[in-house]
Length: 139
Image (cartoon, rainbow, N blue to C red; front, side):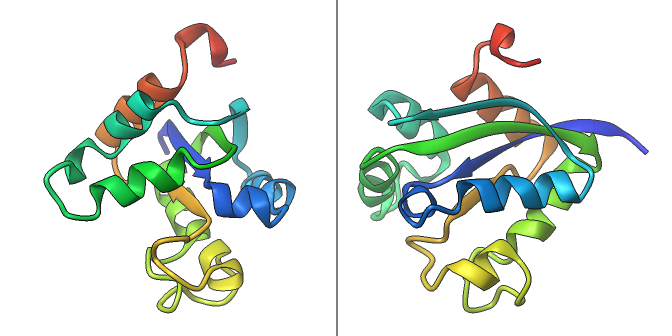
């Protein structure tokens, strides 16, 4: 199996609900390794780059406003099939469709505040990691 890196965010709603430790523990319990971690208030430019594929959509401004509204936790997670494993742990984007036991299934109610983000492909992971972390910040 391929060892890969992926990117996750515990979004501002997850931080406000004091779920950071619980969420990170789920990734570690699955056998994944945290290789970079920081809590920040996202700069607007970083948020706009992160959501660039939604730039022309009417909800783009709301996404940027939400993600920059208060502290969040950004992390790089590494392990076998990390991208798929993280997305499985996160659950469906719409929390009402997420299975119980997943992060969104257990802790979220709306798409707009769905607790976590995880990269959906190796290309997205590489782009997102580079947007949020300098190479020297990754162990």
